[in-house]
Image: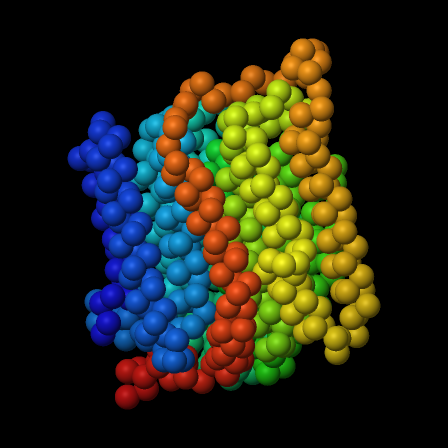
Amino acid sequence: MNHLLIAPILLPAIVAPFIIMVVRYHLDLQRIFSIASTVAIAAITLALAAQAADGTVQVYELGDWPAPFGIVLVLDRLSAMMIVLTAVLALAVLLYAIGTGWDARGANFHALFQFQLMGIIGAFLTGDAFNLFVFFEVLLIASYGLMIHAGGATRFRAGVQYVVYNLLGSTLFLFALGTLYAVTGTLNMADLALRVAELPAEDTALLRVGAILLLLVFAIKAAVLPLHFWLPASYANAPLPVAALFAIMTKVGAYAILRMYTLVFGPEVEITAGLAGDWLLPAALVTLAVGAIGVLGARDIGRLVAFGAITSMGTLLTAVALFTPEAVAAALYYTVHSTLAAAFLFLVADMVMERQGGEIAPKPVMAQSGLIAALFFAGAIALAGMPPLSGFLGKLLVMDAARSHDLVWWIWGVILVSSLITIIGLARAGSLIFWKSHGLEPEAQLEGDDTEAPIQEQTASNSALPFVSAFGLLSGLVMLTIFAGPMTDYAEATAAQLFAPQDYLETVLERASK
């Protein structure tokens, strides 16, 4: 077995308790160990991605127990892409949090950050549905701690709302797993796929119940309307560097939909055929529209970016809901773009909040206003899907994949109109925050301003790390645009592997079949 496969889960699982028990009172040492761990995870995930690039499926059997009896981790093109994206994003966010001093505003930031990485990467690598639930719970616990980092009543209320919605999802998840286990007698994904295909007709009703419950769980994680209500307040009131890391968490829901509804409940499974797409497509389109309206009506820059993240998820899940290889390839390309774009704009929004508060209104000209305005402009282009950045290419791929669908004009219309509304909302915010600030005298700007005072004095820092992190994510978007051809080829190969899972099944169950 390739022991490198378990390393990106095991490393943060060791570093996090070490930070708590050994260096919890030494912030500089916490930062050193956290950065070293995250850099190592990035290097390991890149090595794993290189191994999976040729389509090879690798299995790691914990305790040397073969599937379906033991716990297994599985590496293929899709999981490799997602863990690399997680590691790159995590490194940028960690450097930003250290550079701005966000990690010093509360206890245990770095330990929680490492547990968060463990949960996210574990969810992408696990080959067992129950362990997907376990890693979801690790995500929930760590993300709640990160969300209320630095305290505050508003942040605590948003955190409670976040936990309540996600505990509801966890409860549904357990019900779904219990239902599936009662019908099939297994929760290993590969074994589930074989047993579902062999089920007699009289057991299909209960199986469909389990499949629907799973879809609801993943829809909550992916913030699909009407299950999206937890996201705007949660992301807007969380520390915005934390919200930037959370940009990958909604993708865990989309990943789980792709994995389960191509492998276990695939298009060829008659009893569940069309189950996800029939409901998911209209919900995704409504999510896209509501997110765009939220961007237009936002009065706070944190909520503005949070609704932008909802818009991105609507576009992504529209492609996923089509459930064709072409549409899934478009969804995978857009996954990378939307994660980087949302995280980038969350970091830029935090720069604005640190200097003049979160309200979208003319205020005194902030420090480094020109540079931050340029970053906001680039982020707005990326999030709205305007040329020349990768969001434009991603939306073109999604629209092209929908050409043969019966609802093609609805899909095109919602995507285009929502993009226009998003552009208007972002342009309005940028104009008020940056341009109109230069057109008013300081006295006029401050008169009657009863908003919360800027908090930059709490973490005054001349560190260049925040801008290094922001430009790093922007560089990722630029590279995704320049190398759109190779990335699209990889996405197409990944989609083909998802829709032809025979290699996955044979590799995972190889020892059990002997």
